[in-house]
Image 1 (tube, rainbow, N blue to C red):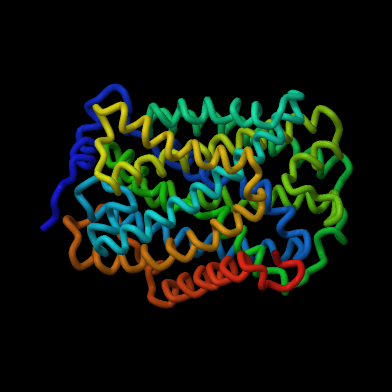
Image 2: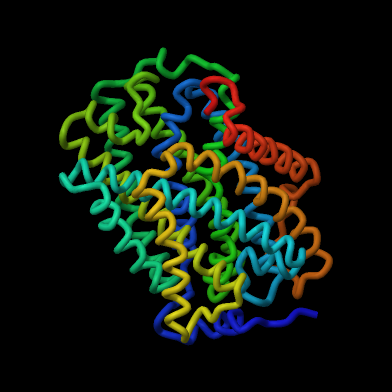
Length: 415
């Protein structure tokens, strides 16, 4: 027997309130997944892959993308088997008990804060370069609209993601076309392969794809219109993510080579193409971070409501407190440069990847036995035990890498 928390009751009433709408369309769902993924990860991948090469990066993207999509589809089935609109932490509590709930919550928080720290650092640096402002002011200019959209909830986030995603795609396709048909790319910059370096690349790839925490929000938003659209939106969003995550390193590494790549790729990329391209590349970078910020901050906030049973609606001070918990720590850590851009992503990806691989598998097994209802959609062949085992092994090894990297025990070039 399950009990309904005050926070869950408020979430169930949310669609009737005008302040924070929940209903979203299929394409808004795709945009939320795409926006959550296309953020700091895409800006760090070329730099993180410079030693291993583009081919090693492509292998890592294919493996991480497939396994993460499988994990997201497991979460989708679990959410569709559950009557209450619970977040990941709430689903874990329902099917795995308090320990599972706290592990998932820790995974969501560490992954989310790792990303938001990177956005603080990256956005401040880029806006400082573009506008000639101190980095802390640049970070503030980024955080203010970020927090405002999250305040208004899922519907506002979905609409904002959809609008900005179209702009992002236009910018990046122009930049890639400019690169291919302008300076061009050199095959030797893409053909070298050092498989030894695929391990740290895999960690970044895991982070770049890891958007499981958005799935329960999408399930809540799509349930009002078409629950069967949930798995389709996941697959489309992840395929679009994979295409762009490969396209940007292809263009940047192909043109500049391993020695020319900067930690935030758009800085050197734009400089190589000229002043107009420089502004376009860095505007894309800021927009990419913003869309990811919206998706991650929103799911962090709703998981806080769920985990601590805070009311999600009708209690603005709880909403303010949750937003402060989400925004202030990463802002301070990023501004005072207590964590590097790429290192923050790698550590977060490894830890969250381990949690987000094991827990969805366990939740799927439990939900199939003890779920509340027959789901509108079920994971079929992709939930085969072999795929589940590979998912756990690959992401578990990424977690081990994060641990040894944090203690400086990895080989030269891996850190």
